[in-house]
Amino acid sequence: MNHNATPATSSPSSPALSERERAVAEKFAAGLTYREIGEALFIAPSTVRTHLAAIYEKLGVRNKVALAAHVNRAAGVDVPSLLPDTRPVLAVFPIECLNSEERWRRFADGLSSDITIDLGRYADLPVIAFHTMKSLGSKPADFAADGKALGATYILSGQLRADDTRIRLTIELADARNGVSLWSERYDRPVEDIFALQDSLTETVINVLAGCFGAIATIGRNAVRRKPPASLRAYDLYLLGVEQHNTFSRAGNAEAIRLFSRALELDPTLVRAWTELAYAYSIEAGNCFGRDPRGSIEKWRAAVENAIRLDPYDSSACNCLGDLMGCLGDFDAAERAYQRVYQYGSNHADTLALLSGSKALVAGDPAEAIPLMERAMRLNPLAPPWYFGMYGRVLFCAGRHREAIAALRRSTLDSPNVLMFLALAHAAASEDAEAAGFVARLRAEFPDFSVEGFISGYPVTNPDAVKAIRNAAKLTKLG
Image 1: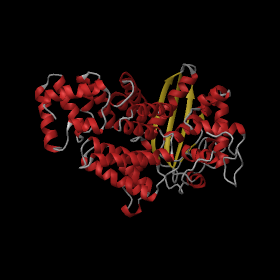
Image 2: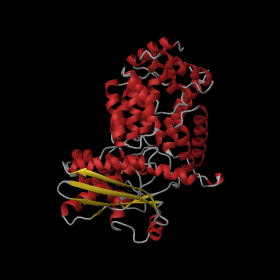
Image 3: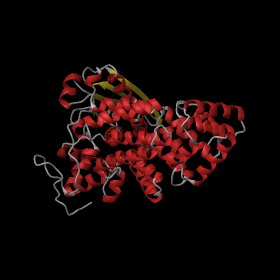
């Protein structure tokens, strides 16, 4: 980052940032948390939050992608101009504290700020800056009026109750147009270390809301299905594409590619659509869905490079890039990408689940894979089926075959690599009849699939993982 660049990381009509605000903006755009920023700049995390609120307000940005674009332009880095955002917008009202004690009011404010900022980092939709929302109080006076004034689609609000031993947080997501409740949840926690408690509650709320099958995405998909096909916008198509992509079937993957491609025709700045398109092409290559695996890898490369160009700090895009580098044989680059994944996405369950599989099968330390996967499942109690598919292959590579079978059976059985790992795990557990059944299904439904094709296209490059897969494949006579 060029610190000698013009300090005005703002548009001509907005105020310039101060030197301290510019330093905070650069570090936050680079993926650091407010605590890490505070340590680097020798200021309190609460001061970082205050600066970020002012930065968002001055620059008129709603999310990290837009903030990174401002920072990069100020540093002289060429970035594509952002199209008008057609995605839903989330407004997070400060959590209402029902206790009179000042310490719990401060806790509620800190929790509200943490949730707002982390949603801005991980959610697939813009989030209105906390500074703006704090001026409006803890709940909308008039949903229709406030929602319209804010340009919000969804409103998140909450209440906090606490005593000396326990804390209770209630969170509700509502339709900004009419106040109809769309989702709600209650969290009870013992009062221990106050900062650890704040982190725990933030992580839990974020992952339940912002995961690929979290509350916001599920509500969005249900709403999209009620729209006429001709009226679907880029974000609508992206949501439907994620659903198809996560079936991991041949037909579902092909439809996901079509939907993501159409979304990107409408909005070529939609980072997550580029990332998911890249993953869809990687699945096409690894599962032998296409007739030209090298062509699929090249399309994978083009898509993930677009995602990284738009947002080099997106943790899912970095993970996809790491897998690509492994596929191309550049394992040092793969490991560097995975290090960035953890730096930018250590609290995001979807990211941790992807990184777990990459550590086990591609590059890095396979011993880290299972703890990463277990943390992902703790963070996201709404774990989608693909988590279990990933967990199953990680457990298989670790030699925990019966646990792998239990996990894989909770995944989608329309995926050839899930069928392959079930066959391999049963064979390694000396359950020959069960293994033969999955081999027969694999050959009947996916005649073009091969173990070696999966190894080269996934890619599987960690030596112990390659050895475990090939040894079990010999038992099943899978080629």
